[in-house]
Image (cartoon, rainbow, N blue to C red):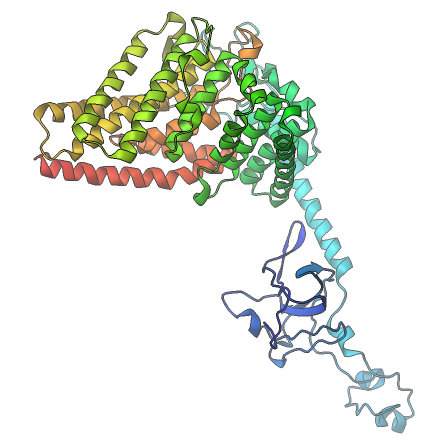
Length: 618
């Protein structure tokens, strides 16, 4: 407030690649024109806005300045207030100090001018023509629009030149050279990233000048899309790797493409800290939300597959752009998908899904529960009969979903009802036996091998898993984190017992050992989730998922890195993996998970110290 009136906006402009940006928020007032002068160097923490030293008037021509800031650089902003909302019609006009009011002749002779009308006495006495006096406001505030536009254009040109250099360097690193591809055994299903090379991750090689939308689309494909590699003999070249066949259908629909581009641009803006990309990603995100809103308003005319794709991309955008207070905001769009499934059109579409995609829907619902501890109707209504005629290679997935749904309901009961610890442990042991039996009954096609390599980055202890089927690898991850949570329940409930028996102590130690084993397996299997399958398409292309396992890997890593009994080695490795995912893939959720993991481990160590002190352990 200045002189008893609300100034619509006190603006300080900060120069960046895009020109100038308002830093202070708007206030409201009546309709009219208003000029406001604000110090360029003003800081909110230094001087209150009301003490900037300027006054405002509803008349354009009037501007009163405080004498205390006359020698400060200022910017004059002109606003049109319409219905309480300020609209900026201002021009950049820096303050250049107090000019002399003398006539030209007196200024040249450097003598004092008495500024009499019509001519000053000094010019009359010297017989010189008096050219009149200066218009002070016009000299105090000069029009700098052209200069500002030129500086902004130069800044953008420098940014574009820097991007071209980066693309050029990436282009050179993507050109395969003889001997650059290491020989791999035919059974390998993983392309390792060598420490001696900058990267072996396949990239889409594009021209040096790439539109921003194409940059976002390319980044999404390079980082998050499943890529299959075809072999030439025993060599594997990044240039031969092809994206999932689902990608072509996505690129044909404008809304689907906008959804992919919004996620890619948001992630790329996080990696490069590029404000321009971030703004464009928000614009694309808004367009996708509008498209989904139209679908919700008229669901009978909607394409269910396209709708679910848009909502998945909205969830991924939330993961990429999340803040510490919105760590689980991605679940909002899953709630929207669950609401749509109540419509007959969408529920029929779910039944017609490929069996793998159908099961994945329930796995996501289970993960959502353990993220927010809220049971969704999809879990309550689950039945194995909802996946009819499942082929033999799919049946283990159906059985695992059934076990996890029952464990989810059990966990919700424990979380809300707080039953007796002894009863909880007995029930949890039944789930542990059931999960262990599930693993022993797996068919041969579900087997995997553990390989070791000293040249692969991002592997835990140099180990990585090789699966015959990418989908099987993802199901194994669900099994591991679920078994880890079951045993964590056993540990926590036994720790609550006032007088645990000797068998309870043994069972607790056994559960801690299982937790450590499952956490290690999650870390060792993570490389397979991020990497590229090197076996080519050995099955129906429709079974190849569009997305790789990067996003779904965050939840198991969070469980492994923050569980009770997790070894320090595992915790430190998980923190490093999340930092790398956030830094190189632009997924902010990975960064925001780290404080929660550290807090969980700190609490576990205190609980374990208390347990040891009470029960006589050292």
